[in-house]
Amino acid sequence: MNIKRLSAIAVVVGAGALILAGCSTSGGNTGGTSASPSATSKSGFDAIDKSLSGTITAAGSSAQVAAQTGYSAAFASVATGVTLNYNPEGSGGGRKDFIAGSLDFAGSDAPLSADEAKQAEATFPGGALDIPVYLDGVAIAYNNSAASSLNLTASTLAKIFSGKITDWSDPAIAKDNGGKALPSKKITVVTRSDSSGTMQNLTNYLSGAAASDWAAGPNLGTLPQIPGMDLQKGGAAVATEITAVDGAIGGVDHSALGSLKAASVDGVKLSNDGIAEAMSTGFSITPNSTPGDLSGSFDYAKIKADTKAYPIPLVSYAIIPAKFKDATKEKLVVSYLQFIASSDGQKAGSTKAGSAPLPDSILKQVVKTLDTVK
Image 1 (cartoon, rainbow, N blue to C red):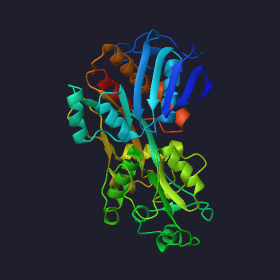
Image 2: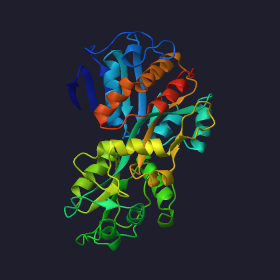
Image 3: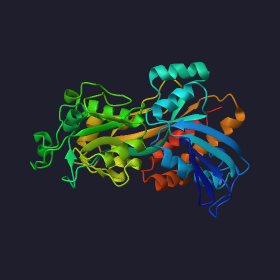
Image 4: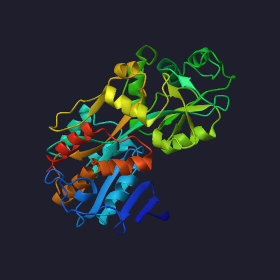
């Protein structure tokens, strides 16, 4: 276990868990004691109750790890008695553990399915709420020294990830890149062995933008297995494997990209501006049966028609009970998420993860929903 100091925040990573605790008050804006922005005009740092103390236990999306580090460090610089334990076990694992009642909230790159929402009602009588906290994109990472830059269409990606295209010299790849053919090299598709919200977003895109070439359908926790596929647990492991394997390609969350090259998709480079454009163009709230739920979905036809929009955006959620069984936990979790839904919170997460902030229109809805949690 490695321990290091970062801006008065202790960061401990071990046994797959991310643990963040406040150690001292930072020199930033720390005024105010209200945990509820709706009760006063205060928000962000000003609304954090410095007297809060306790531990929040969460798990799920590995894509959220960097952002959760930023959110938590900023929050704990004021509420120094609050600790967040976050285990990046993958979105599917987080949703499963939340439904089982072992988490205060789950981080997930996909909202609860209809069946999961029903299961959650058995654990939490008031049902569960999907709360958007994080905006980013799914990067198509690749390792091919012959391609300093690369563009891939939805159709070509669908054929690569379904095993119909197996070599980098394929004419479809050349067509996507102005007719320039790459040298022959085996394509190795790297994907998640665990259930991943990142993969759900990728398969949603493939199903929505290239349905005729993608028979597997949407909302899959990993890509369907094909010969020679390389399975890795966790987004970071997928990125590491792509780096190590010549000819590899796979979908990873933007924050895990590191030094890897990312292909343009349908002619649009991965960028925060492109992700924000896709959010503005194609995202809509499609709630589950719990009042105030903020589940959302993307219209990929609208996104594809917008030449400024990056085609594979990703909205990640905190999944919480609509009614907590423990009032202390409710206050801790809601206060923390209210901070994330502020401009201060979004800035802290975006700075750490290199992601795009959620738009104000979504954040206002988040605050409104959090005000209903009991």
